[in-house]
Amino acid sequence: MSTAFRAPESGTAPAAKSPRVERRWDWPLLVVCAVSALVVGLLSPADTSQEAWGLAAALGYGCAALVAARSSAPWAPAPAVVAVVGAVVLPLLYLTVISKEQMEVGVVERAADLLFASGSPYHPTPHVVRDFNPYLPGMALFGIPHMLFGDTPFTSARLWFLVGFLAAVAGAIRVLTNGRDADAGRVSTPGGVTGRTGVLWLFACPVVALPLTIGGVDPPVIGLMCLALVFTQRGDAGRAGLALGAAAALKWTAWPAIPVLVAVLAVRGGRRAALKCAVGAVGIALLAVLPVALVDSGAFYRNVVLYPLGLGPTASSAQSPLLGHLIAVLVPHGEAVTVALIALSAAGVGLSLVIRPPRSAVAGADRLALGLILAIVLSPATRIGYAIYPIVLLAWPRFAAALSTGVPDRQPHGTGQAVGRQT
Image 1 (tube, rainbow, N blue to C red):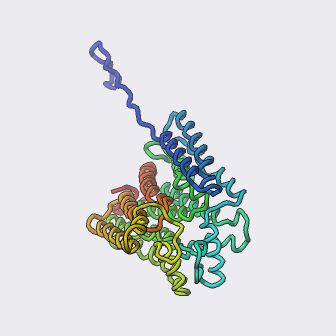
Image 2: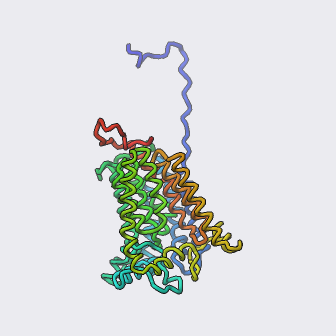
């Protein structure tokens, strides 16, 4: 008899091991999301898009928490679908019907009008908050449908922010599954979460759902950064640079990612890979920014440099009671102090890239998240909504790394580099 089927020699059966009970995080986090959304709804000014989203999303997250609690598997698709429908789809449809949106939507749509009329998306003499456009020239592309076809739900910049985010995340999943769309629904992480389910949970996250619903400009930026991180994880320096350059053409918040991903690629692929990424990212960003900046350098400086930092004659609407804002208000020459603190924190993160460069996309994203947290906290003009950057940067690369372990690596043998794995 084979030893694999041999009965125990003693008459006493071995003591059965008690099954390990794994802690569930999905439904408790959904409860936290519901409470957070309710707080947003109750504390937002009356009759605003934030109030409408918060009250509707709280109900959606609550229903999703109930579904998750009754599900036998953690992070299942069903509660994610309920959360996305309740926190994104239904609030978005409602806000579209009543024509209520974030002010950024109108800013981007006017930027497209100005770009094609004058060659610059910036108001030359901005006086009130709505006149200012703090975004880089690439952001005006999302306003082109509105400029061409007029004011309809299908031409709103809000819809195209959503499309841009969807396209970037779908592209990232396709890269993770080696270009096989069918695998997005089958290949899973060791915890059993497939690519499609992971995307649903990403959409359900409140810091993503809120701007997608009300028309925030940050989702397409962070989506492209996620795509760049996936290319970095797979060792594709050229495409990582292209994705990062596209993000850097939209908003300043993507620029800190350039030195971080270059440092990761320098460790993983050598100097040539790092240079390839840097040239692609900086080249695309400068091609988008420089021509417009030269058309009207004064307007560019007032809109894109002074206003976001809260240093212009008109106070930025992006103000939250974080450290930078408090310093600017309470400390003499506080605005100069905050700028100096931001510069010091950036120098510290940059020095860390040289002394101890990150060796994986996950480590690089963690370093980038730290730098952005410092910038958000210390900036005199910031929003709590900017939390989308560090939260997604901490969560997405870990999911991407876990998902890639379930995908056969197509790297040819003999290259000496397993780009599909973290080091």
